[in-house]
Image (cartoon, rainbow, N blue to C red; front, side):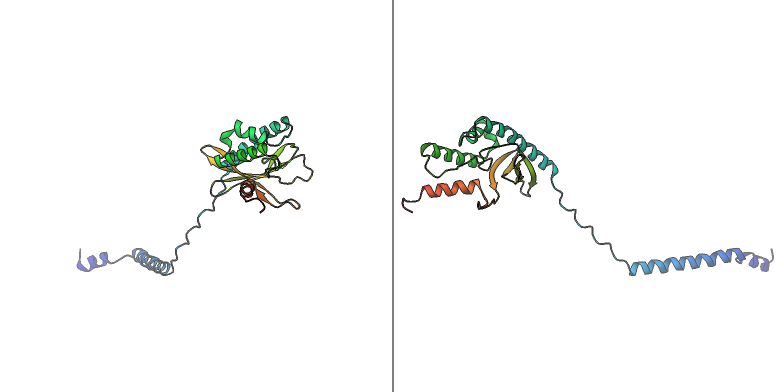
Length: 213
């Protein structure tokens, strides 16, 4: 093959030159886009942590425990005729695991004081039923489980025409069950809000005051 022919053979053909030119443009555009995207890159903000979810399992377990107790206790209370310091003491003896030792000892002490001296300042009503002398059917109106695990159940008497919350027992988890640690009472009329532990503590302090104070 003549030298000139060999040179001509080695020169890029028109199609090859066209593809090569397109390839160079494509590579240049790709490099430009890469550079621009790198200079303007902003990382996406981190996703916010998930909002704490209400422990529905704990709520359901607490609700079942409280409702079971009140269904049982209202029947016991009505069978006893609503006599003061009988049904609550029986409940403490029949279901000791349902109450904290502190609550049990305070209620037992108050009941003992009442038997020995009826005129002494003691509870004048049922602590679990907000002092009522008639109990219909106590039902949970609302239930809340706090971050510390304590459960609060707002109770009302379905036969009360006002449908007021009468008492809110407070419970703490114990293994796979619960126990009552306090009973809270909302404000009604001239009666201020309070709870059973504070009331019993006030009675105890009053008993230890010197006579005449």
